[in-house]
Amino acid sequence: MQERSRKEKNILYIVVPCYNEEQVLAETSKRLKEKCEMLIHDGKIAKESRIVFVDDGSKDHTWNMIDEFHKMDSIFSGVKLSRNRGHQNALLAGLTMASEKADIVISMDADLQDDINAVDQMIEKYYEGCDIVYGVRSARDTDTFFKRFTAEAFYKLINKMGGELVYNHADYRLMSKRALKGLLEFDEVNIFLRGMVPMVGYQSDIVTYERAERFAGESKYPLKKMLSFAFEGITSLSVKPIKMIFNVGILICVISVLAIIYCLVRHFTNNTVSGWTSLVMSIWFLGGLQLIAIGMVGQYIGKIYLETKARPKFIIEQVLND
Image 1 (cartoon, helix red, strand yellow):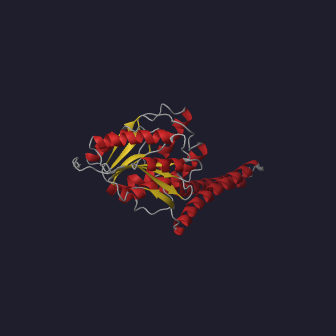
Image 2: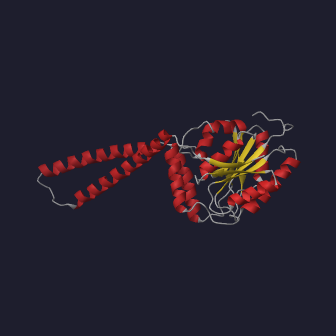
Image 3: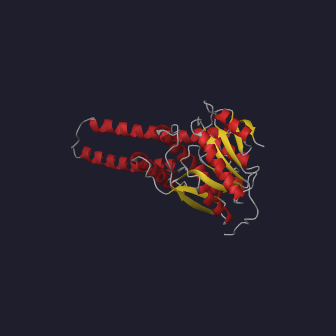
């Protein structure tokens, strides 16, 4: 791993997607500004570095606050999407904008749960030669049992389904300019950045940190949305669910053949028991299995439909950047 020159100050852009974050944005901007000024003072990043807030079609005063931050200090930049496009697309919009001017890009959420001090370690890893540095939670002590259990199951399930996720990593990461350029070459409409970034390759490492409680406001990921996000990740990264359906179909066919042989033996030995319970149960079971299979295949067909349309992942309405 070849180290980078520390004498050459690199431009850092911190990309923060925001959706209805007016309650936390003032504190977030304050802490991020302090961190950037400290890094500039220590000579780790260039003074042209910026904090980029991406407004994902917020319905509160989020964009007005971003506009005010930018007017007060040019270290703050803003990207306003034309409408709500979801966390992943908003993050990608900010990364796309940052790729034009930044040497290093760090993405993080606005809720202050990610430890800002881990940025120092990420930059150190970058200068040591890493192109991607993942922020990884050291523990899940602040989570409820249910959330901890479902989160761990999510990572294990994705990896078993063929995805390549970094365990306990969300979207808090550092990417070099060439790693970011590589990510932007992925053209799919259905994006799942946690699984796409490892596909870029290049030298990577992790930085562990303790995740704090949300500073203010409500979580943007209730259970329903988390389940949808998990399903999106599985179907965006892997075709194993379809293969599993095929294998289950073969298994049921084998069982059906055995059942037919059993029924024939009973018939020819005049030991047939008339009844409808087993028949009804089998019909319901096979009918349900068919509906699940059709639904799963339909999900993939729907994704193919969206990909062929090649609709834009986001439309930028306004950019604030000096």
